[in-house]
Image (cartoon, rainbow, N blue to C red; front, side, top):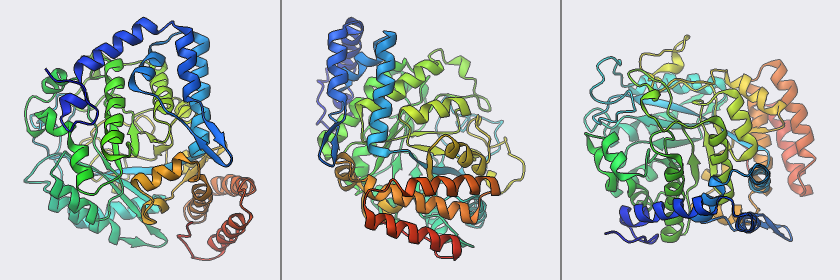
Length: 482
């Protein structure tokens, strides 16, 4: 029988079923223990020391108690604390990105994904390098600077060489004032050698969703194909770290298994990365299962309500205060708006989950991975966010300045990341407004920038940022960064 050990490199030891079940029992027993809940909330509060702000975070057991608690005033306190932590480390900045689907060829049998090998209804498609370049131009014409590339697992159609060629193509495309400055990668678990190749290709974050941490359910949901191997999949982040990728992104697909189990497993994975590699996940994503071709989420009886979904987001933000949190266009406008206030720091905009979808005038559905709930244009999303008081950020400076892994986390943990991220966000927003925005969005945006510039505490930084934004508005000079 496996024994729980967060420092182990064996999946069944750092994601230990007995420990999760014991955690859930402990949380259930203590969900009304107000004294314990107060002590957990107090432990998690940001502590200021001079110019630095620190957060202790929470263990998976402590966070599970908060998730189990249904005392209304305590739940409200959680939401307020989550918002306080989010503002302390990420401010009102929200990073923008878009997914780019390269190929939906896949050899796996995942029963919840329309890409599964037995689906004869879906149109199979793989982009050529020329088609990828056209997709990139379409994304650049919207204003995007950061992509997350996606591909099914197929060693014949989507080998690592295809992914590497695609990354090279994406970075090579310069169109007007547009360029993709950072490519994040969401592909199947692979070898240390292949992770090293991805690192050498200049990727940002390697993202891999666990889907479910419950091993028995995992194996039933992935009956065929290489993804059936639970241990190999779950240990992928360790191989990625060994291959030199120090920014990795976790996530589960909520709705496949009981959410409290997944929540505990997700936090245990984060604790494991911190214990072994000295740095936790760069991002945590919170997708929920959605309708798609050949897939009906009603078949899965573990779906979660909006209220529970929001509580999960808040509790993750409290437990892992320094991680970036991502919500996609799987979610609609109202859910995304609430999520922005309680923990989310990155969102996708104008996403198309079909292969080759960005060059099509009408949104295609024949190659989609899932239904997109938020179908607004990027301009509409940017304008909406600014009117809510958020700064849409197209910044990729940390990746290109080498502020990744433990270097990023050390800056974030001390609160110092705000000294460069805030002005960088304003400068990249100014680029978007100057090059791509509608007149209404432009008016809203430059008014917001003016207000936000005044908040930069360092006079020298404020002066340089102001001068750079004027240069962006009045010339073709771009890509300023601190």
